[in-house]
Image (tube, rainbow, N blue to C red; front, side, top):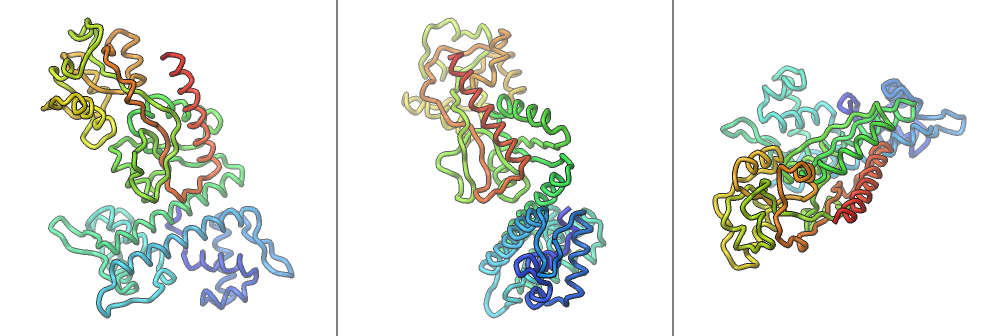
Amino acid sequence: MALDLNLRHLRAFVEVAERQTISAAAHHVYLSQPAITQALAKLEARLEVRLFERRSTGMFLTEPGSLFYKRVVRALKLIAEGAEQATKLGVKGGARGFSRFDQLMTVSQLRSLLAVADAGNFSLAARAIHVSQPTLHRTARDLERLSGMALFDKISQGISLTAAARALAKFGRLALSELNQGFEELETWRGLDTGRIVVGTLPLARSNILPHAINQLVDQRPDVDISVIDGPYDDLLNGLRHGEIDLMTGALRDPLPIEDVRQEPLYSDLLAIVGRAGHPLSKQQELSAQDIAEYPWVVPRAGTPTRTIFENLFDRATIPVPAHVIESSSLVLIRGLLLGSDRLTIVSANQVHLEVSNGLLQQLPIDMSHTARPIGLTTRADWLPTATQSQFVELLRQAGRQFQMDYSIIE
């Protein structure tokens, strides 16, 4: 939705909001007063709300105008930050474009940059945004001339973005995310209970607190769209930092992976060593690391917190870590592998609670009390959630508190 807006019109909107007259704003956005008047009329028609109260003493933001102003200011600030970072990375020698090229950049140029970033090819990018390949190529090269930087490199597989272009694209996506949140807030103000939440989820949260929070939110707001994305931590973190994901749920990282995200613990989780019901080791009263080292394993991929705990089990006992493990975080696959062999896994006891209760799998008698780790939320440090997103976060917090209480009772 944000890609059909005019950035210059948005800047005019901000200037009028801050200076409260069109004449004062005209000097700062280099548009005539009639052009600004027309721009505001188009913007209000597009958003289906009145942004200003026109009075003899000036122009003052309405309630929806104030909501949208907040988002536009944040979006334009992100675009400016992206341009600044791109300039630091991309300007070499005497080659320079406009010093504040973000003030002149168009949505068409930003859309072309993001399309090439996604497709890695001019033809595929043009097809994705429904323009001709020459049009997209010309728009992309116009952005290079405007910025005074090389933004695209030819590689054997197609086109890649330079470091400067990647910085510009990252902040451009975040800016579009802000504007889309602004649209949602206006729809809520108009009485349309809509909205969209994109959640990146890791294995632990997806089997307990996330389903509960989703069901609660949908009961209260049935028209809200929720998209849940599973994937490796690094992929989800990248999507979060680029505005493609609103929040992540799952095991938190220590130390914090990067300074532009924030973590919030919701509950603490313990791991268990699990095998099939009737596993040879289930007959013993107490197990050691040496006992479990003699069996084959299916474990999460290297670098995950659970994999690190798995390796530490054997490092602390000064015995070799089992070799030739199968790597997977798919509970469906893990369950199938365990049921058909004497293979073992390390997993949250809560994740396999149903299988253990039904007599399919069995938790083995080995002390795992040292494996407690926080499960929670990861968001962008500067994230400003909509009312719907804030409600969903609160439902996740409530689900985490309830799960912690229930889990403590079970233990």
